[in-house]
Structure formats: structure tokens, C-alpha cells
Image (cartoon, rainbow, N blue to C red; front, top):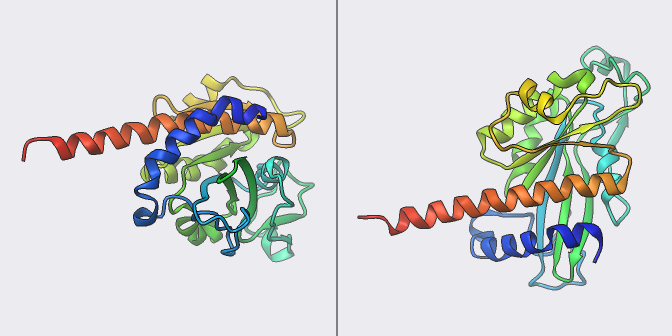
Length: 240
């Protein structure tokens, strides 16, 4: 097994068991073995389970880069060149070298074992594409909110979105070259995160660094969903 598998395998298999019963009713994950276009990446195994993870954050924070670094397949990307019209609404401060932007989603895949995969969906960062978020987030196991400390306020909307919908997430601070370094506690306090929400430092270009982010997310999501499941069972067993 790879490093991600050793650290998170038990959490993933536990989550798999917990969600199998609610998968079809609640849309937990994109589907058994189904990719974003409905095609299977598992040789057509009808029992395969794919768990969805979102990669969100502000404009130019490194979402496409992270998905590309982690994916075992050539990632699906929907990037377009930045236009003069877009420059009027897209703040490129701190990322002046950026020439393209995601207009729908990025997609990548990680196989944990036969029949169990993680699907990575990178969301567009600009406000005008937010209408896509509700569909992309439906049934998500959890999310990675990428943050750039030079533009920390850009990730506030993503943090609010996942908190309000009770979708577990971790904040991954993408440590850009030349940017001032801040500790995880300082970032958590600046974002006013709910207690227990993990904050990790990472390099979105580095596969091993990205794996560490996913390990933290899967561990946290495992605890989060287990607690919700126990809460649900407890309410059902309560007095009529």
C-alpha cells in the first residue's frame, strides 16, 4: 500500500461500510464506480464505490495544481484563458502570472484498492461560477479548502459554504514561494474556524504533501460522519 493507503485505509473502509446503506438514497459520492461523465473507472464493477472529495478555495490558490498532482489519471480540466473582460472582475493580485482559470471543474481519481476510489473535484474559484457548487458538493465525503495567506479572505466563502452545509473540511494552506509563513493556529484563528477543524500546511505541487492533506481530511471526515451516524441512531432509539 502507498502512504495514503496505510494512514487512511481503515477510515475509508469504515466510511464505506457506514455509507453503503445511504448511498443511493442520499447520493453519497458520485456513484458506484461512476465518473463525472457517467463512465466507470473500475472495469465495470457494479459494486465499486467512489467517494467524492471537493477541492475548493479562492481564485488562483492552486486547486487545479493540487488535483493534477494527486490524480493517478490524466486530470480532466476545464480551463480557459483569462480575458480582458475577466480582468475587470477577477482579482489577480499576488497571482499576476496566472493566465488561465477553471470555468467548470477539475477532476482526478485515486484508487485506494479494488472497488474503492477517491474522486477529486476541483471547484471554480470565482463568485460567478458558484451556481455549480451545489451540484458538485452533493454527496461529498468532505472538502479541502485551499488558502493563500496573502489573500486569506478569498477562502472565507468556501469555509462558510461547507460549515453551513455540515460538510467536513480541512483548510490546507498552500505555501507559495515568497509568502510569509503563518502557523496553523494563527490561520485557524484568523478564519474563525469551528473548534476541531484541521489546518495543515502544504505545497499543492507536491504529491506527497497533497497526500498528507487527504489523510487529515479522511481521518477528520471519518470521525465527523461516524458521530453523525451515531447521533442519528441515538435519536431513532430514543423515547417515542
